[in-house]
Image 1 (cartoon, one colour):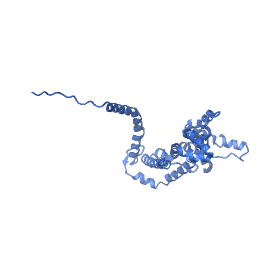
Image 2 (cartoon, one colour):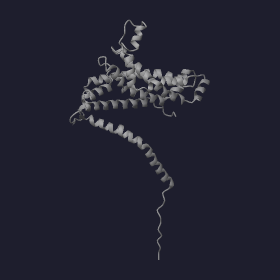
Image 3 (tube, helix red, strand yellow):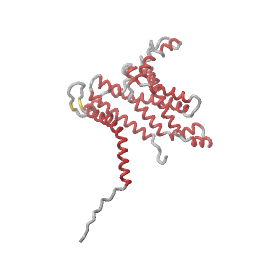
Image 4 (cartoon, one colour):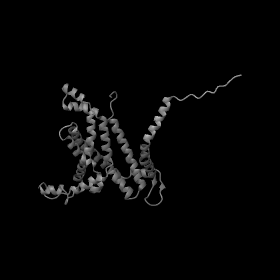
Length: 308
């Protein structure tokens, strides 16, 4: 007579159970971020791509037209002119921001007397919204009731009150000055964190070896700040390409549509001409340009192979 003994299933190892539990806990932690990205980025991006394939008026029925909006972009000279101006503005303002932010970051990097005051003062304009800053500078640049032109006239620097927004060059450089005043403090903080992450032992060793300030900056500071520079550069370029508030509030695209940016033209087509489908197609083109530029910047500022 044979007896059959019941054997229990082998127990799962505790390590596997713990790993699975930690995995679920990790998913719960990232779930809110995933939900936000999905609701506020992925879904709107998909809707924009879908709208770009339609003739989508503000009122009435929309109709599928395929790639017709994208073919129309090729013939839209106003958009390409706006994109050309946006590229020129991005180049100039990015150089200007870094030319101001980097010396400020070097100045406030090390603790000294009144360092906290300097950091706060330089960063303060960054907390102001672009719309508020644009309204402030719109008043400062006013030819009659503003500050700059009347002050120059009262001090005898000009023979009459000069309208800085009447012609392209003064208007363009006024916008550059406003953006640098507004953004340089934020870029300064990013660069300062990169400078403070560089071990002081490297700088001291280079000084002992007789390296001067420029040699240390070229051989130590810049290579070790690649990631920080990449972050600051991408934020600056992306923000400049998406510039809208200052040109809309201060210049309204003038004088003679010479300061019309790409986003301004998208706004015009979408919410003035009510061509929502065409505006969506323009937005997708601008998004592709931003992704391409960010990828190129990351590639150019990547760390060389073999460098930790």
